[in-house]
Length: 390
Image: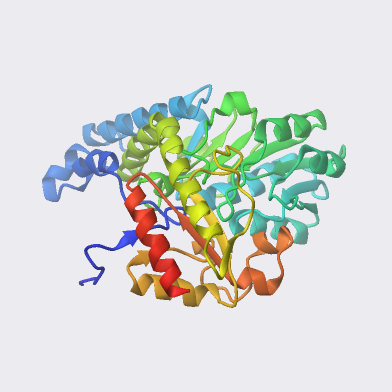
């Protein structure tokens, strides 16, 4: 099958997924060797024979590397999953069900990814008291908002580390401390934050966190749930008892190797890349402010570290975002109207509605997200193409 993507196509949708990085591809290559050559790396990590033991040792090495890069206190706090959606589901259901409080309070936010919102709705149907915190107009979940919602019957608080649409970075350490002061556990969906902001699980003080490899240049179909040691948790996938009984299924050793490599380079380059991308972000926002028919969704001051360095969000007047996305695609630029997981929905973004935009405004959303291979020339050419489309 041949996919016709122009050779000079400019990809600006890194928040949806990142291209596979060289380091991950290199780490995965031995696992993809065909035939008998695959025995050296690609076997079942739970088998007792020599090839199985080799796969197990490689997997555990990757676990140790990821745990080190994420500031975990021990490697066993990393549970490999199929991605962040599974990790989010496992965190909410696993912690809530282990609490034994079938009518306890669950606090999350109105701007979470659907991988958190849908489990929260299901927990509400089970009888839990689910509360959704609203952000302020700048897109932030404040400690004051959480303090007002907490009570002594709160089981779990789940607040994303950074928003995938508007890029707002939330004060996770302060929010986690508030939750703990009321006896509640704290989970964060850190999918968009990894590689963009410093993440140290011990310093943040969270009890659980979700990650996905493909957002940082790793392969799709692999992620992780950080679960702090001794955190009450009921496994959601039962079977052979892998991952110390917390997530049964044969582990994706190839994906895990790619995840570890991508995670290491993302964490290692986080400061330098964030500084570089922030310059590109600010340059594009400055161009948007001078352009007729479009405006930045939020006021993001130049140099701001309160928003992700790789996301630019704007509202196009008198346009539906799908039209603009397709016109830009025809011009050779890949962008989005918001979260890729909701790209086929006809409803306006719940994130934009939560920060006070009207439905008509939200329908004109445009998200540009940049990454490791994005250049200043890419930004200049995109701005020209956008002006032409408008």
